[in-house]
Length: 41
Image (tube, rainbow, N blue to C red; front, side, top):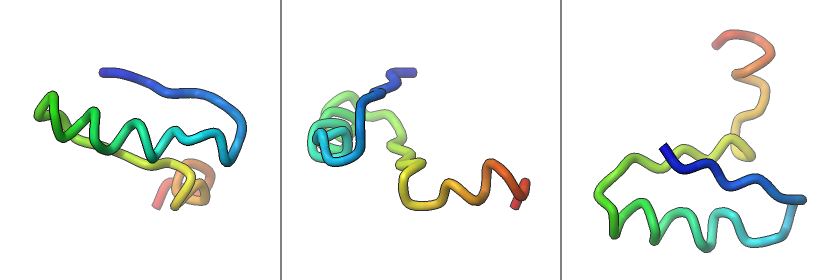
């Protein structure tokens, strides 16, 4: 697992998605659905 943590707009998705593709690992963008962490859904 690789976790990228930085302020919004810093480029985590821009870097993380191609990196995950290159390494053959899943990419999960928590910025898109942060409510899932709170609601459990």
